[in-house]
Amino acid sequence: MSRPTTKADLLTAATDQYEKLNTLISNLTEKELSTDFNFADDEKKKEAHWKRDRNLRDILIHLYEWHQLLLNWVHANQNGDHKPFIPHPYNWKTYGSLNEYFWKKHQNTSLEEAKEMVAKSHNEVLCLAETFSNEELFSKGVYKWVGGSTLGSYFVSATSSHYDWAMKKLKAHIKNCKENH
Image (cartoon, rainbow, N blue to C red; front, side, top):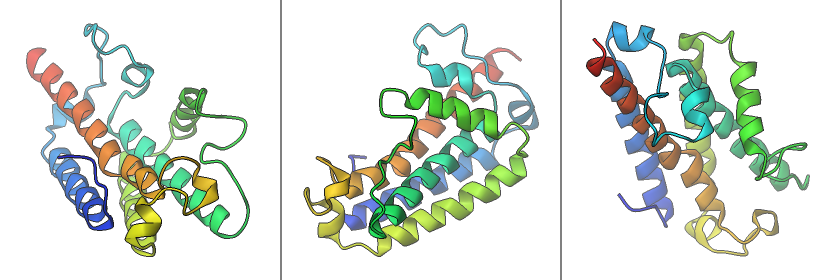
């Protein structure tokens, strides 16, 4: 599926990918749920997140926290409080450290809590997206605080693109569990 460039495509992609993610999650076996992620043997998986996230909860919390970044950023800027997407002291060069912070923050969050949190935040993000017109979401220069991108691209990144990332990671974990039974 190509990256959404309209409000309708954004809402459809976010909904469809979220449903696919939940279907994948609901089909995880007990072994897949109870086995820690381990991608150390795969030389292609060098990015920090392959080491960071160790279970389904970690993935869901990551999605939840990026939903929160989007929601907080949009609401603050709509209210005239000009804030960057990535909160201080982090920035786009150090967002890996922000992801680490999110991971540490939620080590005592249960899987069930994580599922509820991401379901709620997913709905909040879609409801917020609904409040914008197609032009507001996908035309450059509509909101100064968005910079050189479009507001919609942030919604896509926090929803369907991130759900794709989560599914790739879960599928790699499922493959590992099958190979190491």
